[in-house]
Length: 210
Image 1 (cartoon, rainbow, N blue to C red):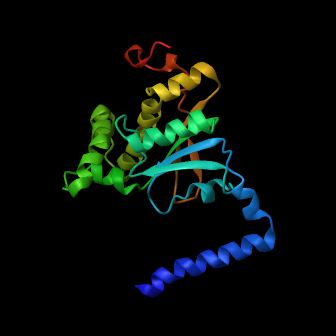
Image 2: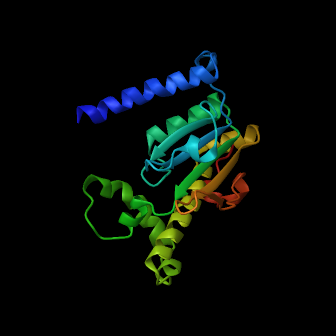
């Protein structure tokens, strides 16, 4: 156990040494602050690191992660991150990125008791119920899981659009919200082309009078 823990500290030392060898001012520049153009709302899955799969550097993406990249209107953690990214950092793009083979999605599709996580997976079950006719018609279980991954991303993009934070930003400036899905089989990101960049894309009940 101790050796496994120590491996992380040794890895950090090697990483820091490598960065300094390539650029003696690397950490000096990082310490000056951040100015990211992107907010990434992704899954907590350890195989989907935002910087690595997008080929970006430290400081370029502001990141929030949770199980199955869900946007819940009562989640103060997510809303705080969203507010800071939009109102303080002035990001230009908010990205919801799911991934195929998501264990949260797969678990939500079953009736298995997942303990405390049941409360979180409820959000995904409701996405399934909303699209049950389409999903139940897919006989191949893997294809059905993959489709729910996509539908879940679309739903979370729309959930972002329903927030006052995003709608206020749309009123003041150009801010785009995107829905992506990452695939383990080829390492590529697929843009789902979810067009939500103004309140006209939302049902009237969700549009604030600003």
